[in-house]
Length: 87
Image (cartoon, rainbow, N blue to C red; front, top):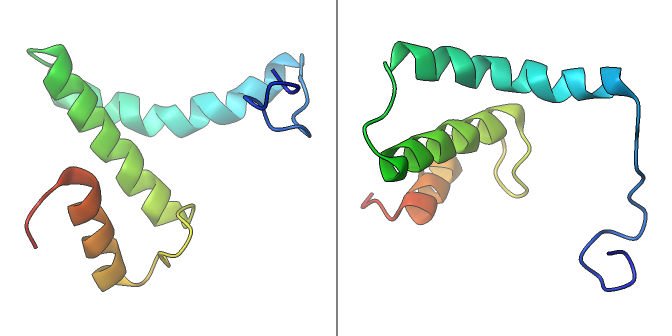
């Protein structure tokens, strides 16, 4: 995959189980939010809702390039662009 360009050339395979805990801890918040929503009626609504949860979490953590976590105007514009909402 590295040779074909699908995978970053400096990516490393980590076969240590405890490193997966970081990902599980990050998704703990999503599990809590979904549980309170009492499930989803269709796959489309589930995927859109989960995408929104993930996008908001990334913005809150400052993981989106060009959108500082404390700039509400830039965050609003990004959300409108991502979800096709009118501002």
